[in-house]
Amino acid sequence: MAYKQGLSDDFVAALNSLHDEPAGEWWPRMLSDPDLFVAVRNNYLNVYYRGCSLARIGLESGAVVVDTHYKYLLKPRLKKEYVRALGGVFQLQSQWPNGFADPFTTVLSDIPALKAAAKPYAGEEKKFVGKVIGSHSNVVDVEIALTREAEEATETEPGKGASAKRIDIAALRWAASGPILDFYEAKLFANKEVRAEGDAKVVAQIATYEKLLSTFEGDIRAGFLRSCENVVALRGISTVRQDMARAALAHGDALTVNIKPFLIVGSFDIDQREGPVWKQHRAKLEGALGTPRVLLAGSATSVKLGRGVPPEEAKGA
Image 1 (tube, one colour):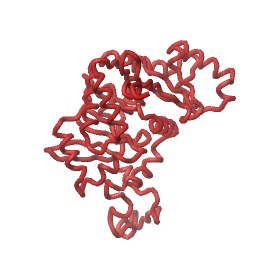
Image 2: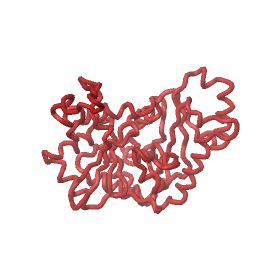
Image 3: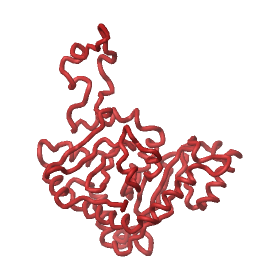
C-alpha cells in the first residue's frame, strides 16, 4: 500500500465545529489532556494513552463518529465486583439495576475513567514510551503503521506480525540543512528481543522499519506535511504543537525523512548496564545498527530525543 496520512478539509471543519458544541465537550478535553496524544491518520484520528487507542475518530456522512473498544469502557472500581449466577444464569439486572450505566462508562467526556480502564492493558514498555512522549515537545506521531496490515489491526485481532510494523515514536529534529523526521523504537532492558545468541530479534525489526521507511519515504514526507497543515488548522491543538507544525511547513521544501530508526533501550540500573553479559549484547546491537543509533537510558526521563534548534528559536537567541 502507499503510505497515507492527513485529514480532509471537510473533516477538519467538522472537528472545529464540534469543538464548541455541548455534545462535543469530549473533544477539547482530549486535546488538552497531557497524557493523551492525538495522532493524524489516513482521514481519521487515533487518541493514544500509553500505547492504547482510546478512541478512533472518523467522519461519516459529514458527522464526526468515535469508536472505542469496550474494554476501555468497563469501570475499574465497581462496588460489586462479583456477579451471582442462579440456575446457571447471571443475575445482571439485580446486580446492575441501572443497566449498562452501572458497570460501564457511558460518556466519552469522562477521560479519567477511560484512562483508568486502559492502565491494565498498557504494559511497562508502553508506559515507558508514554513518559518519553510526554517529556518531548518535538514528538509528532506515535504508533506509526507502515503497512495496511498494521493500520487495520484491531485490539482483538492484531494480525500476524502487525505490531512489528508499528514504530513507537516519530520526532522532528532541526539541522543546518532543515527539518528531519526521525523514528524511534523503544525496548525495555528486560525485553528478550534486545539480546540473543545470534542476532537479536529487534535488529531484524529495525531492518524491516528501515526498508519500509525507504519504500514509502516520499509518501511519509508528503503525509507528514499534510498532517502539519491539519494541526495548524485544528482548533484546540496546543500552541507548542501548532508552532512546530508551522515551522515544519515554512521549511517543508528542506524536510527529509531519516530512514534509519533509532533504538532506545531503557529501564535498567548501573549494575545491569555495566554487566559483562549485557556488554556483549550491547556490542552486537551497536555493531548492527551503529553506536549513535543505540540510545541507552536507565529511565524514561533520561531519554533525549534529538531536537536541534528551530530557525525561529535561533533568530531569537
